[in-house]
Amino acid sequence: MLNFPREKLPKNPKFLIIKLRSIGDVVYNTAVYSPLKRSFPDCHLTVLVEHFSLDIVRHHPDVDQVLCFEKKSLLYQLGFYYRLFADRYDVVIDMHEGTRGAVMCFVTQAPYRVGHKFAKRSFLYNVKLEFGDLNPLHPIDYQVALIKKMGVEFGKISPSIHISEPAKIKADQLLQAEGIDTHESFCILHPGAKIYDQWEAEKFAQLADTIYSRHHMKTLLTCGPGQKHQVDEITPKIKNAPYAFISTGLQELGAITQKARFVVCHDGGYMHFASALGTPVVGMFGWTNPEIWRPPGNNATIVSKEIECRPCNLQTRKEECWNGRPECKSLITVEDILVAIGEVYPVKTMR
Image (cartoon, rainbow, N blue to C red; front, side, top):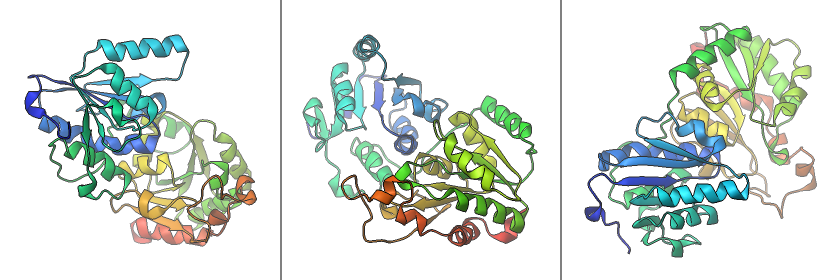
């Protein structure tokens, strides 16, 4: 099949969207839920993600159920796959395109197993859609294009992340515990990155000091799981700026991020998450191409340096990159970031 046979669906179809992988991918996947529900108003929509992305989708009003896949024991995984088969979905959409997602799609034995015609495991689908005529350019475009080919109409295309009220309450409690009042101005520095994509700790510290001297704004340091050691390298180097550190789940972090005046971070999942929440973002790009991976919308300013070896890969990456001093990030100065901050959050609006 080359087209989606929507006229053959039952009255109340059960849909399953499979979207594994990273936080950024799942952030962009949220852009398709509401349009899909508007196009199929009587459908039951289930979304399948991995555990680290659960908080991104679990409170979306158009998602009826969330399944969370975890790479546990073989017995657990077999049970999970059996559940996919037993739940009897009518339509399963593989938006992962990796081997695992395609196998999950096939295991459901849904009457309509939808995927990209040119995916490596497309033989496991029975509805193969091709969307090259839509000319997708950015990651979010590819996700939207597949759903468009199912006859779903889109208005404004943007991610949609919903933060629960309990998470907002807990976020206020976390901030107050760190000495940040509900109405106090603060910014977020999120230094977490892989070793070949890091900005120097001393520059983060200098940035915090300069933000405080210019804007009298406290710095909140945040990070993802397993990244606290990067924060610990920064804090001893901060000379004058008051700062705090919070590590928490994505829902609470999202509520905190929405309260921040701006965020400075590396290209990665948190950058896409913060931008989707509407917070002004300064994103530092190193080895990846910002023309492809920059957040959509107009609330992000990108800082990057063009050097001959980017975008790079495992084969071309230099020794200094593996030692935590990648040239593409080292060339970015504190003043570059301060200029970018002025673009996303002009001085006159600071309070």
